[in-house]
Length: 214
Ligand code: DC
Image (cartoon, rainbow, N blue to C red):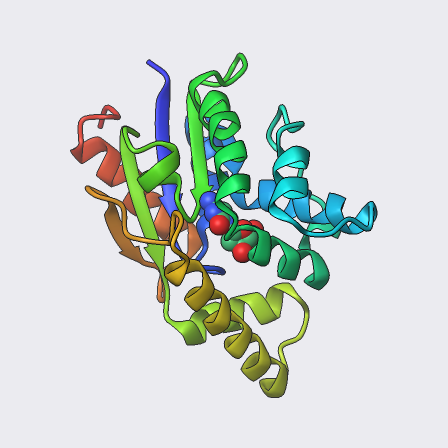
């Protein structure tokens, strides 16, 4: 069986950490779908292209493997462009078959795939064996993101919080594939949970669902 698990949720909710831990525990290919949008944004910036739906879709069509994480992909300018182009239906349609193909055909020795993003349980893999929706309070998410960016001062945290709120709005209000709690998803609030505890809850859920032996 090719096991498919999806994790959706807002920015800085801990999706990436949980996806990595799950991929390591269960030997699953980790597909960070946000990186695809970031990779397209970086290419647009590097080639000094107009961030149009056509250019974005063309660049996306050339992606053939999960995008390798890098610090460049996390830069502020890349994040801004990624957030903007993620609203283009043309780009989402170009990325959809690539993400679906990778989820359904992970290379050996993987036993399946874990995807994280905004629409992985609702659009990319609506028939996933298990779906999780990870959330955390805006304060906790801002704290985590500020720490990640090495900017823990109160003023910076306030700035990070506003930035996250703006992205939440953009991600959940776009007309195409907005951030939603997918049908049948298990919702986890990670505000007061360590990454290890969050993983434990997920694994317990998989056992309860009969997906994993106890
Ligand atoms: O999760 P992230 O911050 O790396 O995502 C980068 C951008 O891509 C963000 O603006 C949301 C968008 N995104 C999306 O629209 N759908 C996904 N499945 C994943 C990310």
